[in-house]
Structure formats: structure tokens, C-alpha cells
Image (tube, rainbow, N blue to C red; front, side):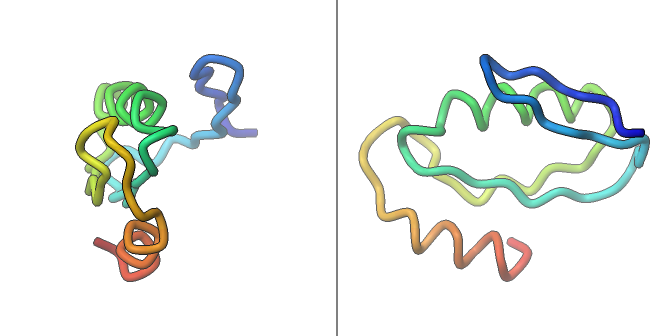
Length: 72
């Protein structure tokens, strides 16, 4: 069973895949959660590719989701 990472009210299942790469992104509303998740996963030795957004300003999420789907 995977470990759970709690970010606010959100449960994020994580495994024991140290050294694996995770591509992550969020729109402006998920910006803070995304950064919390990145911090925690980085401490667990995951390699993170952050594809945006890089600020809490409004953004167009379809562009970010496209980058996630393409792997960065």
C-alpha cells in the first residue's frame, strides 16, 4: 500500500520510488498546494519537473496540462 501525503484536505498517495521523476503542474488556484507537494516529494528523493504555474496570478490551465501530458 502506498504512503499518503496530506496537503491541506487533500490526500496524495505516494510510493517508495526514490529517484523517479514526477511532472507536476497546477493553475493559479492550486499553486500553493503544488508547491507543498513539491517540497514533500523532494524530501523523499523524487526528481520533480515543475511545469507551472510559477505564481498565484491567473493563468490558462490547458497550456499547463498539455505540458504535464508531454512530460515537461
